[in-house]
Structure formats: C-alpha cells, structure tokens
Length: 190
Image (tube, rainbow, N blue to C red):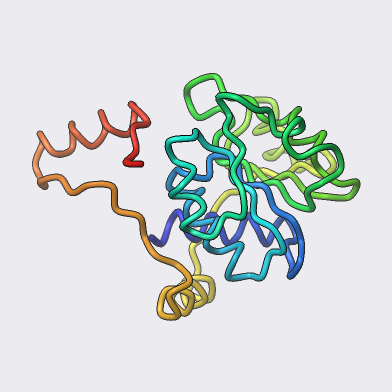
C-alpha cells in the first residue's frame, strides 16, 4: 500500500489535481493505477477515467472510476476527445510491453493541463536529471515522507483507499519466482 499509494498521491498533486477536475489514469488496473483511482476520488476529482483492458474494467469502476477506455479497442483521444483532461497520470508507458501513451494523452489533455508519468523513454529521464523537463510533462520520483503516509492512512481509515490483493504466495524462493512470473505476465484477476 505505501509505495504505490505514495506514488499516486504525489503524482496527482504534481499534476495539480483539485476538486472537480477530470483525470485520466493510464494503467488503472495495475498497482499504481488502482491506488490512483481511489486517491483521485478521495481528492474529489470530478471525473476519473481509467485506461485498462476490458477484463479489468469492472475492477476500475468498483474502485471509483467513472468510465474505462479499453486499450485493446479504443484510443484515449478517440474515446474522450481533444482538450478533455486536466491531469493525465500515466503508469503504463515504457513498462515493458512497448506501451507509449504520451501522444494520445497529449491530444486529450487540456491546454495548461499536466501529464505526469512514472516511466518514460531515456531522453525524458535525462531531461529530468538536467532539470529541463518538457512543458506540461512531469516524471515523478516518489518521496517517502510521514506527512503523505499520514494522509494515506487517513484515507485508508475512512475506507477511501483499500489495497488490492490479487493472490497470496508463500515466503520462499518458489513463491518469489511465482510472484515475479505473475508480475511479468501482467495477469490480473478480473
């Protein structure tokens, strides 16, 4: 709960999310995405749209997503139109299967909106390290701190933030191997 939730909270803040805004969460059924859907709702986002496969759409809506864009059959900009979102939080681009959502998301982002990602091509990491990121594009490096953990604990205590536990595995070498194999397969319960 702490790392994915801290990442989501800090990314949404970095994007300037405030009450009533529209937010797009790319990778909404993954660890960081499921936390972000719940956190965006807890922060009073006006609309939370998640990008995931249709088999995970129900999970995203149960967590508070208002609607889902199925990446297998739709594009973000095609499903939502241009200049629609105030904040885009991308947890999927460059995560290992060739995903690249920036161009689609940029088209759907309002003028002055923010695109915040947890991963990007090497050139964007270099820009981050040099302190010259692109306008309206932010890479997030999670900062662990007690203030944010306290805020997340309050959300959890209030029932606004719940960890998603897909399965439990034994604490053994075999369990670790199974866990990494499951992570690489991107298989989720629907």
